[in-house]
Structures are given as structure tokens and as C-alpha cells.
Amino acid sequence: MTLAIGQPVPDFTATATGDTTLSLSQFKGRQVVIFFYPKASTPGCTTEGGDFRDRKADFDAVDTVILGISRDGIRAQENFKTKQAFNFELISDKDEEVCKLFDVIKLKKLYGKEHLGIERSTFLIDAEGKLAREWRGVKVNGHAQEVLEAARELHASK
Image (tube, rainbow, N blue to C red; front, top):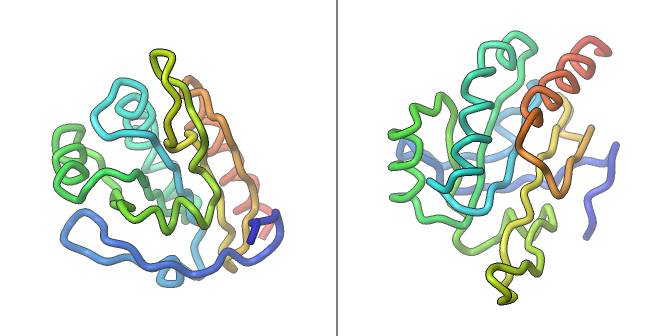
């Protein structure tokens, strides 16, 4: 199954920080930003998470929830969230169920070796649970601001 703009995003349930289990359906009526990042506590992921953290009040102002997802275990996610003072939950997707739903597992190269990993990607889901925007192969600089502007436009168009 491939997600398409304007189509409903299937519900999922996953383990998250704060000793919680989150389902996409619990946010119905609110916009949701889901950003997938390769690995907790690495430089690019720390910068990206910090950019979303620093704009959380602006996302809140347009009724938009932020969720970060990687394949890291819940302990690594908790440590990452605490160390970076993230003001949103992180989801542990060790079994890659959510990653596969959004098709973000890609063949990557690191130091000349190929491996499967998360392609940095972000998805904006509207208040009805439909995919509104997607960004794949994300470059961190300026990305959170671009997502915020898209969330503002989507909220204003309601």
C-alpha cells in the first residue's frame, strides 16, 4: 500500500516516550506532523528535533501535534528526549511497522557500505486523518520552518 496525498492514513499504534502507547486515531481533529529520523542522538537528528522543539508553540497555535519516529529502542528514545528537552513524544519503531507504512526504509550508503535505514522524511496529516503533505530525503536546515508554514496554511484553509 502506498500513501497518497488526500488519502486517509491508516491508523497505527506504537510505543512512545513518557511510558505511553500512541495511536494516530487519538489525534483525530488535530493536524499531525510525523518526522522520521535515522538515529537518536546523532548530529542531524539532534538538530532536526531541536528545530521542531523550538517551534512547538507555533505548531500548537495551529493545533498541530509533533511526533518523532526512529527504529531506536524506547530507552534510547527516552534518553534522547530528556537530553534534548524535547517537548513532544518520540516513537520507538524497532519492528519498522510505522516505517513500512510510510515507506521510509531505503537502501543507504555509509562509508562505502550499503545498509537499510530510515530516509529522513516528514509527513503532515490533516485534522481528518488524510495525508496533506510529504517531504522525503529531507535536508535538516530550514525544514522545521517549512513544515510549520505548511501546517499554518493547512489550518487556515479549514
